[in-house]
Length: 314
Image 1: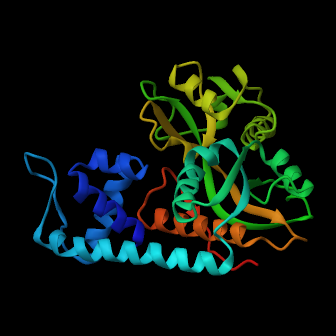
Image 2 (image 1 turned 90 degrees about the vertical axis):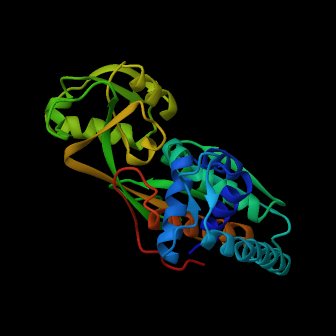
Image 3 (image 1 turned 180 degrees about the horizontal axis):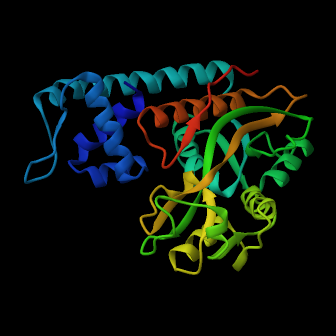
């Protein structure tokens, strides 16, 4: 049982609709439904009757849980405020960096949760490729960043903490089905028009390296866009793209097909090794790790994304 699950349950009880409850807490409706189902499984009882003509209603078990859930959420908020005042989290700033695909797939929800927990801390977001983000950390322009670990490793001036191991898959329009039975190899992909993101994206370099190692030249239809533009071009039928599994969530117009052999990447949390992180930065790291743990426990990731074992960091 998590506080997030309880918050979703209370939201459904308050508005009487899964869709409006998801909107009120700022998540996709399938995510809220999965978390609520996980809570029911944990407690061993159905909390919401989903078959009513007037929308979802609480079962007797749900009615019994509701006041307890409200009290637990209130106590948790009070605990956060008390600790925040002690450790200086009533004010401050966290400058966060992330790649565009991670902004789409993870960070937006994490920033929302962090702002709810620490509303007086200023959040500044920089969205860019991993190499510019690493440079920003080294210069001191960023406090912490989600970056992709390249084969050569990251800048030695940085402390990195691996978080996710994520598969790259082929995105195609949902109306089309690429060659192969549930998978596609690089030779088959070479016969398809390809959409590539701009230079600086690790996924672009990984894609081109896979073609080069196979002795093939891709048929590039469009290149140079940001990740969201790449996905929209694929949805429109312009071509196929190699993208991280995280970006498929909430995009029904995209079909995900596994690359064979598979290609993976490691996502890490990075900061300057020679600087002691502020209380606010440490709190952001903790919020991120808790969110990832809750999400993977509820099966909330699209595709194959493995949350790596966490370790304590100063």
